[in-house]
Image (tube, rainbow, N blue to C red; front, side, top):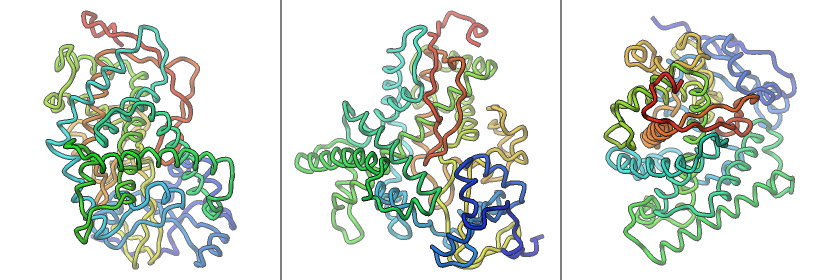
Length: 471
């Protein structure tokens, strides 16, 4: 039986600043704020304040945070044509351009059709050797008792892999330029999401962060455009993404422009390594806290791999490793907040809430994944939540680390393969212990990363040791 429609005017939400709306509290503690908003029900109304109303020339502008899986499914799948992506901050538009992450309508559908085969099926499985070999090479450089920045190590692995897939070559000395440009860009993007005023400050005004952003952005642009021009002047048969883009055509049958190719490369580069590196970093953090999970993982790796590197054929047998990966994405989803959707026309959600035309929709995997109704004792690390029988008891869209519907992440299959293989390779070689005295907190930039370098101590795994000595 459907519920009676609840008018948008009666949807409750937290108290906010009259002038600045919910922005000050959200900026101060984005993750905590999203969790606190659950107390207001399936849909929480977050007024944007009088200044936003004046700037946007709207009456009572507000965000609507969805806390109900059925409502989320409605927006992302059932009635997705009624909800478009909201305009992104200027710096995000500058970074990604018209890449597949930001396009809409027929352009987005055409782009997905072109790129989908590259990130699914046998094509994805063919990357397994590269992933395992790259990971093994990095872990081989770690000595007993060595202290490492595990986030930096995971970035080294995933960036090396995606660079090879995009350009068919090793990244070399460009790695530092890429990672620094990404970090600065994320900081500026988060600032513009947190404040309408920050969005209105032109990028040409030479603030410290603007200068740092343009320095890194221009260097990254120079590298990508050089690679595009070099490949055009000397084509190869390399089965990489750059070759795919150079062979692709637009809606009129014409080759893609350098600008279009650049936009897609930036999108795949950033989305294809940084998110996975963050997830793996959180995975090692969680594993360092649980002796029981580490012991079960060690037993599975010994049984399935018997000391060798994992392959694509091993992935279906690495069931517990996959459960750890999925539980990590639940607790620390890299995409902690999906892009805001805007309703084209009035709509009534399955929960009964009525949304007016122009309503801005917040969907937060962070909030949904820690909802006690779907995940009891939600802050506890428990891979058994993703055993088949447990998953079957939860509604769709209570878990959505890769979004859903027509904009579901293209790289989901690739990310899962990479996450499982990296985790299996590293855990079969070393045990990682969090250095004492660190308080690691999540930093909600464009993706969810640790707020400080996560230092871990390396212990080599000796296969003749019993499992109990590994915990």
